[in-house]
Length: 214
Length: 214
DNA sequence: TAGAATTTATACCGGCAAGTATAATCGCAG
DNA sequence: CTGCGATTATACTTGCCGGTATAAATTCTA
Image 1 (spheres, each protein chain N blue to C red):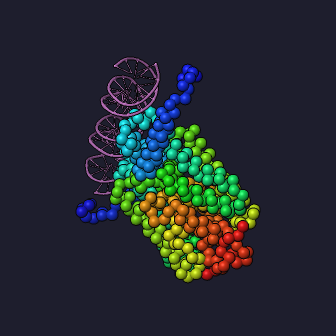
Image 2: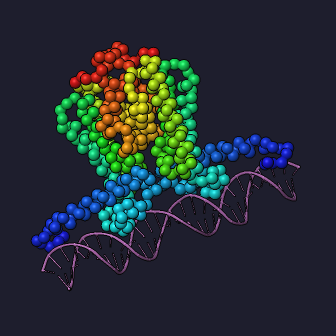
Image 3: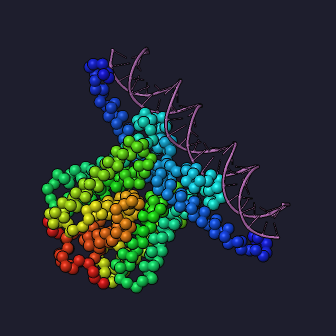
């Protein structure tokens, strides 16, 4: 019911262009939000970065709130797909958890890291807010599941999966507060150290059997 | 140079009243911010909770920004004093760290927990923002110091103190995101589990010598 | 090259909320 | 009860910013 008959699919190039521009808008928004915060960023600011004017933004996005939503989604989506990949592999619970951690750090240090964790879902409409909560909850459940799996297969010691998931996610999310692009550590290095820390804990280990079980 | 001569100190009751009311304003602000976020909270909202009107608030506080600042300070101050107490005791680095964790959880689950970690210092004037950063940095340094101390005295295993402090603080700060007053776990229980987790790590331990060294 | 669709800009509206005169009250000392 | 400081309320101004009506420019198709 759009476009009568023959040239149903446009040049294809036009659509691609549009998509790219839309992505650029979302990206610019994400960066601006990270730097100044959601409420301290005006649409004019975002437009200026792109050398465009405000109405142009509205051509690609329906309103400011939706920009935030898309940023949320982009970031969370990356973590979710890391979870998905981990589920594919058939290694131990601990190994899978570590894979997720790597993907998580990657996502959190991206442009969308800020939105992912520091943006307030209060700033979203109830419907969008609910959707975000849902996505976050899925990730949380995924992590808890991996911890439980690890406990079951013996690759992780006994602990409260819920608390472990909270602590791990908290430590990871917090990276968004202190990470800077020019940081001394790369995303991967950070992931390695976090893994080391969470696996071995702070207590001194009787050296030798540090942590390479299943 | 205020109040000529004799009754320098007023009734004392008057001053006390004022102080109490001011505290009530800050508290109300903290609660409102936590529920709706800083930018979604109007001064009229805060005033309404106190059954007062907006100008009354200005009698106790110079502007909205200062309210946020005071909330920040209150929360951070509590953590700082936990650090101070820990420094008093002469126990192992690990024991002191655990004491700090308890105080930290207490602070983060208070009314000021939200402001402490989720409020954006972007919303503060450069001067105030700088002051907050300073306070946060002091706490961070304190924690790193305890980790180093623990490593030195053998109560903590070898690790990167900076990363350990980041991970620990992150996990703790994140509590502000999920903690609800009616939660099943009390602040103290949360602290215990976190300590257990961070001390022992996720890897299974050869049972027996779990973690009660110096 | 006509003209339709797509893309962008100019110029405006409206509302909300921070902050502020100004004046009315309240409570206590004399 | 009287007058002065401390406290609170009424009613307003002001600026910002999200959102939009409208028209111009650009690009593709035929």
